Image 1 (tube, rainbow, N blue to C red):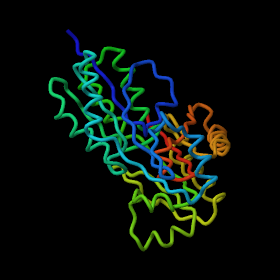
Image 2: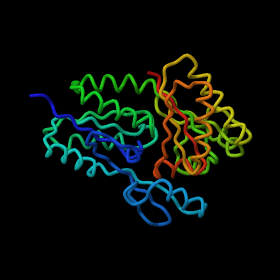
Image 3: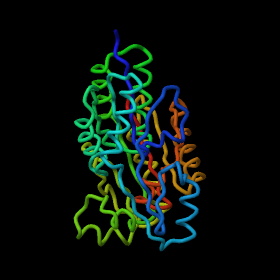
Length: 283
């Protein structure tokens, strides 16, 4: 009898905003906004969240990752539904403790094999791994082959992040940088990138938003030259700007698919409004 393979993914992937043709279980973080708790996507969605923080720039905002017990209960549900194997795909372990929680939860649910994959990414970079896993499960692939393929894809996901302010990243400790460098970064529009290990670090210091956006497009165009890629742009309260950048990329690469995806409230709580993430996956 072949294995029945289940998929678990954290809400930071943004799969809530996508149509999936396979049952996927979500583990969701909690957003703490102005003294109230919201379950990501269930209680508050991207547009509403960015509207709130734009209208209230000093509102207190933080997040809490899913508890280990709650993750274990998701594995338990899959076990009860007859799944024998579970592939759990989560946000970069350098950006959240979700990976550690997902690993610890495995030991709480005997009788089901759980494999946790650190995507070393976020947003569509993480969601793309889910899409590939679904495709392979439907094609009858074995769990081990799926994991091997996902790990290969993971090593070919590249992501640049342009933030309007470092206030949120610094406050929540999500930026890997020396304190001396941070002092100068706070006065400018930094272009950041996710390294191979999944940590978010400064890429270049740029003076103005318009120059930073132009430089981002320039870097991306150079990076993808001659490569077979799928691209994505994660936006916050700036979908029109995301569309503009998409068009600039399509002007030089009509053959490329560019997905536009909203950055979820929990990720946006760390990145802040005005953030744009532009990434690509080398196929």
